[in-house]
Length: 174
Image 1 (cartoon, helix red, strand yellow):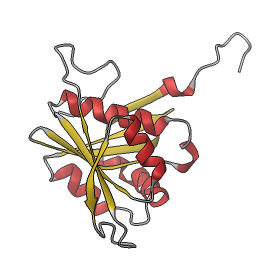
Image 2: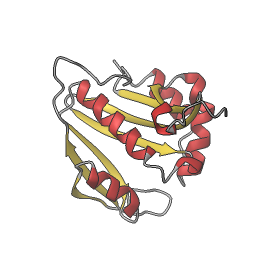
Image 3: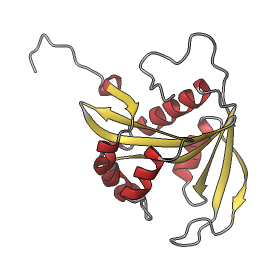
Image 4: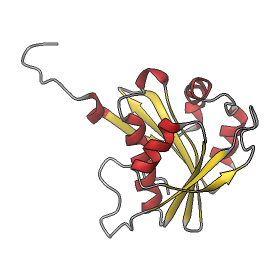
């Protein structure tokens, strides 16, 4: 780097866009790193091609996918299906940026609230969700098939979007 070049904050170089079928191999790498029961290629193909409720985005850094998030937008409720980052990019608050983008997109699509399930043992994720306005609303007993762990159900209200639409740089998932 030349001395005259400005030092850039990498977080400002994050790009969010719609997930495409060609992204699935990269998404599967993230899945295997993040989850004990990762989704299959077929599951993602079905979500992207057959589920009209499904909305998925990727987060890129310098053209490389480092995270993704998905939700189902049903009537006026968004249900987060998954959110994950490559392990090397965790701990930088980029998962929070990804969740922010997903919530903004849900609000833009007219969703009034957003829900998700999280392992009762995953306090790191629960703390992030609480920070973003999610509140516990119950449990699903034995929800996770790998170890029968319970899931904490959490809900958050979403802000209404005005005439200005989504913030600049946001993904249009319509």
